[in-house]
Length: 303
Ligand code: GUN
Image 1 (cartoon, rainbow, N blue to C red):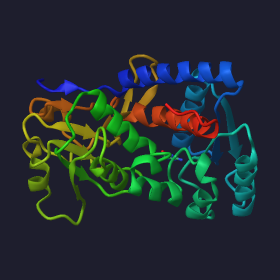
Image 2: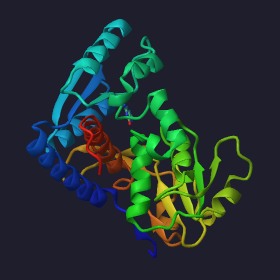
Image 3: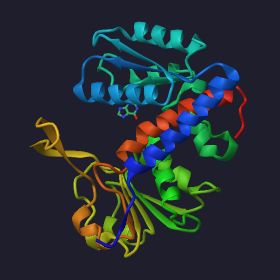
């Protein structure tokens, strides 16, 4: 293995420590802590485990945290009323509605009902627009792209003038990370190409990348010969390809594979993120950072 591993698990610990210390300072000076509510509709096991981890992490960094679980048959009107209640709640700085929502609820309508100043997921059109404008306009970058950029910066990878190729065009990862990497500023200023299922010669584009960000949701899509020697490879894919018994707990757990053939790629890339333990842990970490920032904006704390 010649590539340097960029471990989300390690970077997470450093950032959570930084957040905890800032929360302590704010509490001392202003007598308040950030408040995060996660709204979960129904009992989707993956959603329950994500929300549980978000709440646990919020608790760890000293936030006030509320987990609001609603029945699967809650009406859209009742869910909108609940969001309105938290929009008006002074203790709450961040509102997160766990996705996906049941079919009878219009997801877009729900996300658009969240106060953009409490939209710590960064999914509201106002925050998407702010991200597009860039610079001081940005309030809440979406968490996975923010985590990716943070990993690239903390690994010391040069982004200015770099060829960045993003595989995937989702609203949650592909489009926002491409937008962030082309802005002027630290950890950006790159030349960006987005490729997707409609792109011809996908491999040719990938081979040009100094930084290759893959969020396609296809296990082992990126082959080792698509990687430029020394490139920084960020694998956002979390694909469940089977099950195994955990050595630690003895329980059945999912076998996860990324979108990149890690075993082969690690001998060609200069930097690479593992799956699991790479981008995954960064998403919740950046959610905590956005929630802290939300309170800092409210208190006019400039860093
Ligand atoms: N479901 C899967 N990922 C996410 C996320 O980042 N935010 C929300 N709200 N729901 C999700």
